Image (cartoon, rainbow, N blue to C red; front, top):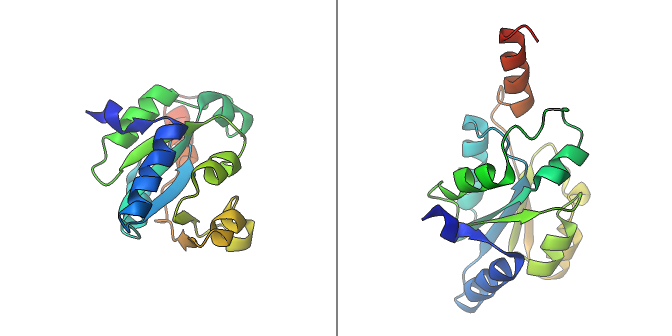
Length: 162
């Protein structure tokens, strides 16, 4: 069941410890993933191939609102976004974070590999210094052009004359 892949911070930390003990690597990425689209799937699938498991940290509803992407965001609740993310076969686990950045969760769980989109320079990725100092890796992945939750939201609003 998908709910078994939605973890607390403690469960995520324990899973990473189990991976480490088994000589495996957990990949970590984060985001809102408000409307899951083909660009997200491509990115997440590519991230999952960098290690033995993929942990996705999702912004809570409150932290999405603080990002000020749009007054309507998030379009889906944390529960809905978590369940959809957990349903992806290449996602090992999902964890929520309420902070403005994933710095605290990264430092709490210390993933093996931290991944963000190529729109970030490695030195600007939150938590990169921590992961590198603890023997991990930081990688960036290219996005698929033409996919954006903001673009989808605008298309829906335009179609409804809003």
